[in-house]
Length: 307
Image 1 (tube, rainbow, N blue to C red):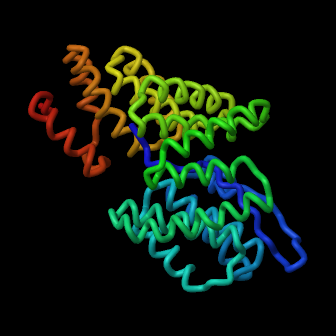
Image 2 (cartoon, rainbow, N blue to C red; image 1 turned 135 degrees about the horizontal axis):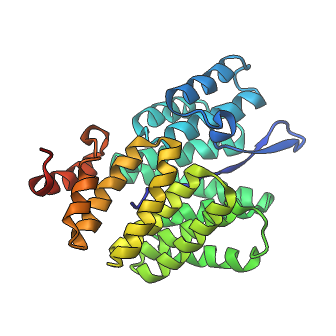
Image 3 (tube, rainbow, N blue to C red; image 1 turned 180 degrees about the vertical axis):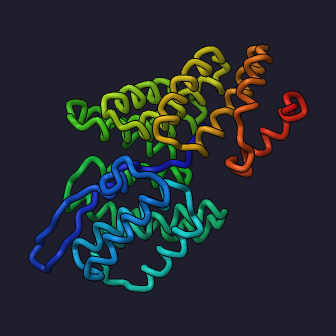
């Protein structure tokens, strides 16, 4: 599975006064929810937001988790509505405003409104460059490279990321290395170099394992498995996806699990193992599949239709 390019952790710096007073934090909703998933997580975030003064520092932090929740779960219609509403107010803290631009661009891109998405991407890019100059942080450089990649300049994005890889080789944070290697993998994939993409995805998966983040592990190993599949290294793809499934089951990510079963049907068929392909086909719940994966599922239903 090639996921839509995303930054799992966006480091946010919010300026809270004209005297350059600031605080830095991560905008990942898992920081609030922990093991709590789905609607219960969203309810917990909303409960925290409702108890906070609107536009206070605490409210901005929790609202970042709120945005992250919708993005992480690919609920782009809801995310677009929320960001559009908040963008009507123009005096948000700089990085919150930048986050709104970023998610607005990604949401519009999802709905194939590319020209409008580019407008917000340019705003986010301009803002991020200014912030990166004022507050040097390698995560922000990854954000800039991510935007370049999403809007078609994968070669420049990769060059930026490669430079980061050299200058921050001793960085201690596993999540930084996951983001770095994952985005390098995206760029190489987009440039048509799947062999190099696989190398970066292998490193990303290894760093994800070091993070002990179950969701992160399932995403990065799944990306690696998909790259093996595209390289027609089907046995490695099979074994890697089977490894991924153990983590998807732990995180109860039923939608991604269903999509993974679709890929395993494809791979087992490519390996001429129809018995295994049928086993995975029978595990698929079609109602959990995206429109894209439903198309693949329907193709194989002609072969492996449930009795």
